[in-house]
Length: 138
Image 1 (tube, rainbow, N blue to C red):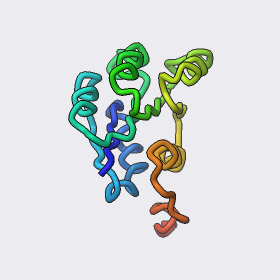
Image 2 (image 1 turned 120 degrees about the vertical axis):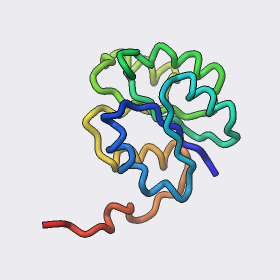
Image 3 (image 1 turned 120 degrees about the horizontal axis):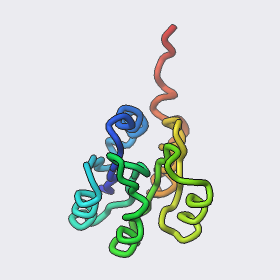
Image 4 (image 1 turned 30 degrees about the vertical axis):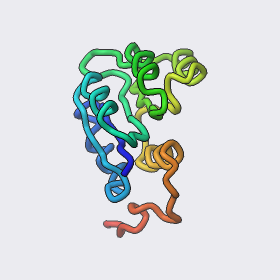
């Protein structure tokens, strides 16, 4: 089973939990608190397909750690969630230099996150996502 690791702020967790709901049966989803834990999970997992990392955690800009992460774990796909802490030029440079594979800007939708997961992890995309099967509440 492939692993998806998340390093996001507490305020982002509810939306991430909602976004990942359809992946619980096909991926091992792990939440970590810092870059050290992220690296530890990468080291222990054989099939870690991706990490979803928020650009700033507890006033620390995570993009400073990306070169070290990429050097040690070059096969892991990285999705960065930016809440306005990175300039447009920095985003372009991160993608151009392969420090990350995709960037999602806040606010985002569950579909934006799930589409990135399907693409980056290579999971087959169902014809309808789980949230399209839910009833509309009036």
